[in-house]
Amino acid sequence: MDSYERTIFHVDVNSAFLSWSALKILEEDPDAVDLRTIPSGVGGDVKTRHGIITAKSIPAKKYGVQTGEPVVKALQKCPQLVLVPPDFETYRKYSRALMEILARYTPLIQQVSIDEAYMDLTDRIAPNDRDGALALAGQIRAHVREELGFTVNVGISVNKLLAKTASDFVKPDRTHTLYPEEVPAKMWPLSIGTLHGCGKSTAQKLQLIGINTIGDAAAADLSLLQSVLGQKSGAYIWNSANGISHSRVEPEREQAKSVSNERTLSEDVTRENYQTDGVPVICMLSEKVASRLQKSGLTGQTVTLQVKSSDFERYSRQTSLPDMTDRAKDIEGAALYLADKLLNGPDGLFEAGISIRLIGVGVSRISEKQIHQMDLFEWADRNEEDEKARRAEEEEQKAKSARQARLDEMMNKVNSRYGDGTLKKGNKKDNKQDGH
Image 1 (cartoon, rainbow, N blue to C red):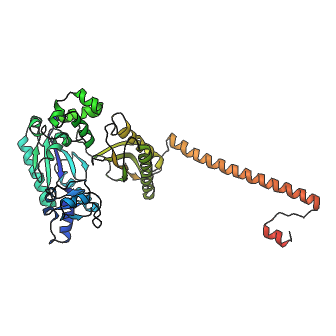
Image 2: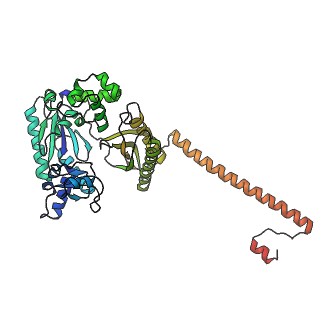
Image 3: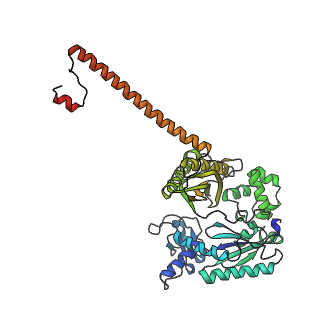
């Protein structure tokens, strides 16, 4: 079935972190002010007022407060801005509750972040039943609002790209459609920077050649875009601008349990400083993940490398190892391989001028550690380690024997010259007691 013959929803929580923090505060104190009704934000160090804004309320948005900007700058725009710290335990709780509700409508759910997911509802709503799609979207929104207390936007289309774009239209608590015939009127007038997958640096490159809107990119020659952005990135921008996407909703089939670590970098990583500032972080994160697996008695098989760009877009790659592991060497090797593909290739992020501000390494497909048959390479590695240890012990024993032989020879010479018993074997204490 072609991607244009599907019914795809994109469900996106409105101001997720801000909404969920507001609900947590109201749970603890029903008389507290609802953060969603006043200029407020999540992020940074509330006491020192440093850091960046990770979420904002709609009233704060009216003052020009933006996600990703420094807290100091946000406070200059809106001095009365109320700030609260992030609470990821609460966020994970509400995220799980949201996914449980969506799962009541279809098992074909692909969660792409803590606050958004795609749903393939083709088996329930025919692609040409647009009234039915609108009604179901309204039902989902009401279900979330009434049961969980927060709101979501739902974007509807025939593929993931257009559904995602639709959900970003007017907020909050709205349903929007973006079918292929609606693309010229609804999507093409938007600025090129709003195109999903088009980061800030890519948008700047396109603007330099006169491509300012999504419609400009859609009308441009593919060869022109590829000459500016590279083969893969140019094709992606052209296809996306024309509403073309064949990516399918892929439900998570593996065990959700995973072990991961990530690090926000003190300085953005580019191709120029990747070896000095990027590789060491990947190695360190791999060590941490391996240590956590070992302490928990777990092994995993799928390694994921995730980065966040300076535009706050997340990108990830993953690969499955031939065998379960908890060894840093295995995880590090896979993570560096994935990073090289994602960042350094001819179609990599660095080639597109995208810099990295966060790196994460994770291992999934987790299970309890079990006795397993080692593969040839693991057997060779461990035998090499055993052989090195055996050789070291053998060399040490040889050195000891040589020292003892020299000592015996010296004693024999002294005793032969000055008489037997002049020197005796024993410890220092014995020699002192004997007057030697």
